[in-house]
Amino acid sequence: MRRDAQAVILLLVGGGMLRLAWTGDYLDYVKPYAFWLIVPAGVLLVAVAAITGVQAWKDRADSGDGHGHGEPKVAWLLLAPVVGMLLVAPDALGSYEAERTGTVVGAEESRSSYPELPDDVDPVPLTLLDYAARAIFDEGQTLEGHRIQLRGFILYEGDEPQLARMVVSCCAADARPVKIGFDWASSNSDVPADLEPDQWVEVVGEYSPRQGRDEINGELVPYIEVESITGIPAPDNEYQ
Amino acid sequence: MTHSSVPMPHNEAVSADLADTDAPAAERPPRARRRGLTSIEALGLLLVFGLTARPGLTDLFAAPAAQAWAARFVAVCVQAFPFLVLGVALSAAISAFVPAGFFHKAVPKRTALAVPVAGVAGAVLPACECASVPVAGALVRRGVAPAAAFTFMLASPAINPIVVVSTFVAFPGNPEMVAARVCASLVAAVGIGWLWAKLGKTEWLRLPEHRHHDDGKWAAYWAAIRHDFLHAGGYLVIGAAIAASLNTLVPETWLAPIADSPVLGVLALAVLAVLVSICSESDAFVAASLTQFSPTAKLAFMVVGPFIDVKLAAMQAGTFGRRFAARFAPAAFLAALAAAALMGVVWL
Image 1: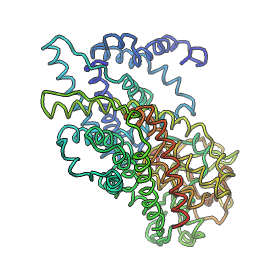
Image 2 (image 1 turned 45 degrees about the vertical axis):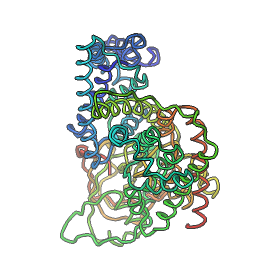
Image 3 (image 1 turned 180 degrees about the horizontal axis):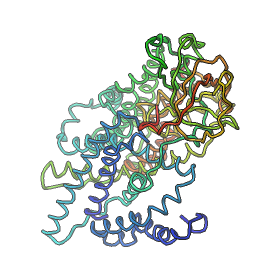
Image 4 (image 1 turned 180 degrees about the vertical axis):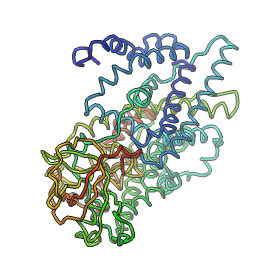
């Protein structure tokens, strides 16, 4: 590989990372804090590309030869993530993955404290993981008497629609869902038939003592007594 | 990319054809072998590829499984590249600016002593395993005994402060887990170092050559960053593709029956750590979420992961040569597994 081709690859990798950071699409793949890793790394790669390009150009002016010392051919593979970042630009993981992966709530089992929810907020917005942990490991004690607001996407466990959100610890490669069932018992309406997989919804409701089990890993799935369910646009950061 | 297997609307067939012919051309240009590709040609090809391939690529990756695979692949790359950049920037600084005599003074003469010192010194590099591999390569090149460099490479991603804190956060109220992780990782890393000192052969190592630069230290610095990133990055991409494939293809339901057996559970999570290739800075959170498994199994996941996984094996093969990687990977796996089992009995 010649040195000027190397400069192009470095520029594409660095530029691709900077573009992900600029557009905010990086949130589909990594945690928000990774912004502060991606940007300096991207800037450094672009700088190395620039220096390499200038040197190659200078050397060519000197000797008419921009040869690259037979640098590694494996470097061409770096074009694959560039194509992935810039051209394929895959969406954040959603219902397809969530339906094939067990709910993740067990990670919260060792949590020691469940602070009281505020009384002056109604409904109280909670993350799905927080709701599930309070419902399962604290038997909903801190949830009783509050209206709760949850945001997530729809997936189907068999015929049953559930609310889910992907929990990411490092990057999307380790994304695992937390799932919550809908308890329609007290709601006046029937189960809405128009819940599409991957559709983002905001659910307002109250704690339900009902629990189910995830068929994949046998973990408990808590339920929420649905008062209302409304479609919302997907948030910038689809993961938690 | 085959034509027959991808159903394509008629009007996009042309661009898809272009995509098919351009993709291999852009990645493995036949002419590169003889005289290389100029940047203008490379840019031109990429531009054509970018303009024509998008509809074809969108079709190809329309299936949910392909989308999920691509998301994971890009995710592993985007997460790992910054740490790789940090690693190659550090290793280039070691190559270019640290005088050759420095490590002779700093590292104990006797390898048996240098190995544990290198292990503890691993705590100073607050980065994950993608960074420690190129740094270890630079240390070997600078004349540090390979045994000590490998111990540093293995210990650093497992015992540095960031990893210790994240493990502590992932296992609240369970400091034994942190202690067990640090102990097991250090013991296994030092064990591997001593094992290399006794049995390792230098001819297994094939470090990619660095050329001497007469233009001064800065020229050498930038050249080393460029070379190391392109080299290790290429291998990282192979590892990321394998990890994304395994994550997408291996169904989680396989794990459930294994979790009940204590011995199989430990083995299963050790193998899982190799397959999923999670960064050591956050593997504790993933380990904590595998609640069906015993604490020792989770410990094995966290000790094996930073030592060896598919992404690391690919990078080690690139940095130190394939003959090295073929011997080092199984040894590192077994040492980590044994240390985790031992510390699991002691601490958990």
